[in-house]
Length: 215
Image (cartoon, rainbow, N blue to C red; front, side):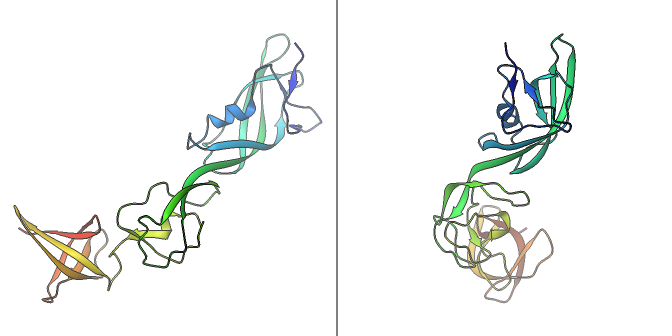
């Protein structure tokens, strides 16, 4: 059967093309390396670096997980006409699309994100951190335009900034008391608030409330 030359001008140094064995698909092989299996991948370009003459590719493996669009080193393996194994390398430029959360409308800093986002297909760009799910009680940390991808640093739990109001739930055994409070600076890993009485309490934020465990 006639060898199949990989599409997208997969030309190696010296003018040797990457030749694929029948049935081998480079895009399918690279999709197996997607960090998000539900994402979509297309190969936009392939540039070879080392490939033996007469070798027909039967498999390919990306050297690292494919988490975003970009250029990835790909190890190719195959066999020549005599059946002897051979291998080589190439650079594949890929485009990755995935469903991420975007702002359904313009959102101002401190505005709740509940019901204000939707899932949309966007290109994944290296260095970005888009979110799939919005934690309960999250608010925007900055102005977000309609359609803008929501990233991790674009949200925070409500009531986590000093001066913001927060609901304080004090628990002692089976007894619980709820009262208003106002967030104040606290040590790392804890949350602090001042009650109307002026008392300062320390606890953990749970579901948008400051939970204080009393002895």
